[in-house]
Image: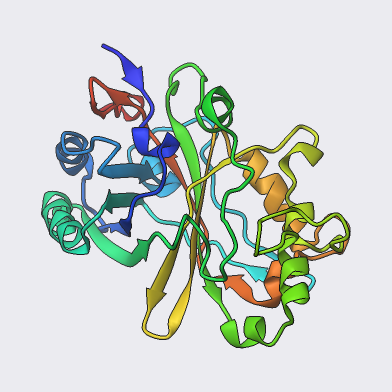
Length: 292
């Protein structure tokens, strides 16, 4: 019985996506709903992540799974908004994703209720709505597997994902000169070249994965979102553990040296949550680590 990672972790982002966070209904036993869900998850059209509260409700532990860290430093607030269950629906037709959610909601209805839904989409060749390329430094091939997939006994083939919804302030962003915008990111938007003369607050310099000890590589699969006049980025980072992501977030916040990431000049996180993404066994979600 082959065990493999959920394939969406290592695949390019889709044309359309829907992110759904669920809470556990008080007093409900989630076991039957989770077994039914597992049979419907292929890790490609739908990727599943399980939160700490749900694991605890089952009386189990997953090594490495913990709560998202709330931070407040240098005038920067990074919230922690945990969820019991997280699904990433992927495809090319928004209507199909809506129908798929309705089916999944019905499967889960005895124990779970949706708590948040975000529709996302690909922009250009994989750019943030600011026009900058996202995920330029993503590891590739075997390096991506090493960065994103756990090999620990009992959870081999699984991954840990950090999820944040960021809200962009385009009034502030558009008021900057092109040079100021490039210096916030640390790359030229026109050709994606890294800027050697960017300030230390530039995002690229704050999060250069090879400059951490140990190196802090993650696999990013972020996508833009928009709802009415509000818009931004759904940031998702998959890792073999949460350590690399937390090292980057701590440095972005300025907790280490008092230098906050310049991205905070025009964007801020509304949410922050951690989930464990179980592996697949014979093409279906493997929940044996949870006793299911």
